[in-house]
Amino acid sequence: MKTTTLLLTSALLGLFTSFAAHSGDVDSAKYLSIAGLESPPEDPSNYLQKDQDAVRLGELLFFDTEMSSTGQVACASCHFTEGKYIANESLPAGKSRSFRSVMQVNGVAYNRFFFWDGRADSLWAQALGPIQNPDEHNFDRLGAVAYVARKYSDRMEIIAFKSKKYHRHLKIVKKWLSSGNSTEPPSESINFVFTLIGKSLAAFQTSLPVQPAPWDEVAQAKITGHTLDIEQERIWRGFKVFNGKGGCSNCHDGPLFTDFSFHNTAMPSQPELGIEAGRYDVLPAIKENEFGCYSPYSDADKDNCRHLEYINQSLDMNFGAFKTPTLRDVGSKVRLGHSSQFASLEEIIDHYDKAPAGVHGRMLNTRSLSELKPLGLTKAEKEYLITFLHAL
Image (cartoon, rainbow, N blue to C red; front, side, top):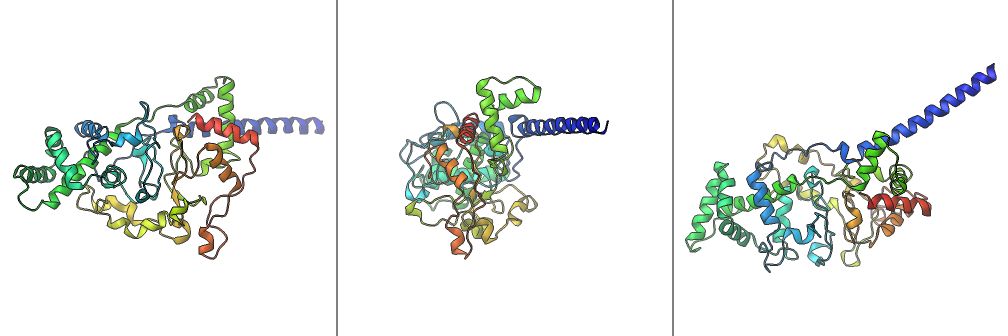
């Protein structure tokens, strides 16, 4: 009798353990699929974030190649490829752009800090960077303002009119432009109108929905108890590696597969760049950014800028750290890593599997600052993982 009871108890325990593991996988799938995606957070520094007039203007600006010194570069040149909002690495990055690979637009509204090192604390501030970058749009601030104020005069008037402050500055700029530029440019008003460009671009990008991918279909099938086909089963096995032995979801977390944070993963640097300080390099000045949350061009109250007050500035946490990118559409990227170090998913997975120590630790008299640990992935596990990543 005792033996029978023990066997029954063991069987039930095994069944419970199996069910718990299965249930845990399904719960994780829901959390890591589009089903778990909430509405984007509000940005109090951008009064135009949800304004439909700004969204429409932002869309026009996003695709306008005249927003550049050559008349050939638009935001879409790097962020829109073959009818989709996916990164395009066909435009080589110059040295002053530090060889940074193009980040995805997917889900950008959910971010708190922007660029690979997080030097911008709002989407509208980020949008203004490439416009002035000599290796991207190469458009000086005054030229950009003059172009937009003339070509999109009526649209600018509509969005500026919604704020007395911005409307006053737009009137000053238009008056100066119509005067033949006979006096010194009104720099403060030009800056305010310049931010309208960034805030409209941000409003448009914020409005873009995150599109479901094959992975989301697999997750939904698991959630609802439907049977997977052969390819979906391979995706599911890859997900289990991603969420389990691979440890990928420790940082690539949530429906957008990013924790929006910064990590040192011992990424190799391009020889021309030397040892990169990453996040640590921008921390001293981030609160003083010209177009930051604390600036006069922000629409936020000081209480809404607390994300700048509580930044971890420790050397060991930030030295060599770069942003965790979203993995949505990662299979479409031809270069991977913050400075395009890797040419394939296979290469970057091998890097994470081997977990090199990196160079930053030696500079601080410690073995490594990298968060990576060797994974010991098998060839089959890597193949499943790649299948999963291509399904995002």
